[in-house]
Amino acid sequence: MIDSNLTRRDMLAAAAVTGGAMIGDQLMPGAMSPAAAQGAATALTPLDVVLHVNGTERRLKLDPRTTVLDTLREHLHLTGSKKGCDHGQCGACTVIIGGRRMLSCLTLAVMHQGDSITTIEGLGTPDNLHPMQAAFVKHDGYQCGYCTPGQICSAVSVLDEIKANIPSHASADLIAPPQVTSVELRERMSGNICRCGAYSNIIDAITEVEASKT
Image (tube, rainbow, N blue to C red):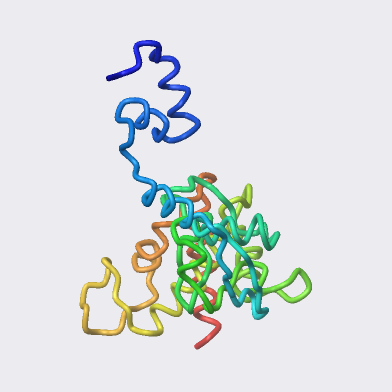
C-alpha cells in the first residue's frame, strides 16, 4: 500500500536525490532484493585502471562510471579537453584513443584499459606546436577557443582517416581513395561545432597541413 503521508513534493525530492530508488521502495516494499542491493553496491567499487596518456602511463583508481573526459579533467588535471554539451553532440571533448578520434564524454575510462590516449596537451607545446596547431593559429581557426582542442584533435584524425582510405558520407566513390576537398573535410568535421563560426578558417588550416605533407 502506498504511504498516504508521501506527498508529491516528497516524491520529487526523493527522485532528485536517489534517482527513484527511494520512491520505488516506498511504492513497492521489498522490490530490490538483498542480493540485488549488494550487486548495485559492488558495481560502484573503484576499479584499478591503467591508461597511457600523452605517452605516460597513468595508474588510477576510478568509479567505473567515470568517463574518459572526467578522468582527464578531474583526475589527471588535463583541462585542455573541454566539457561542452556532455552528450556527444558538440565535439569539444574529442581526443585520440588508439589512433582514432573519440568523444571522451561518451566513453568510460574502464573501457580503455591499457589504451593510448592523446589529448591536445600531447600534440604540441607553446614552444613546439603541432603543425595543425600552428595552422589554426595562422588561419584564425578559432575565436573564443573553447572548441579548439576538440577541433584540432579531430582535424589530425581526419587526415589520418583520409590517408587510410576510409570513406565518408561525402565520398562519391566508396572504393576510390578519398580526396582532401572542402566538401570532404566539412563532412568529416561536421561533428565538431564552432559557435563562433570559424568553419572556413578551420578548413583552410587543415588543407594547408595536408598540402605541406605532399
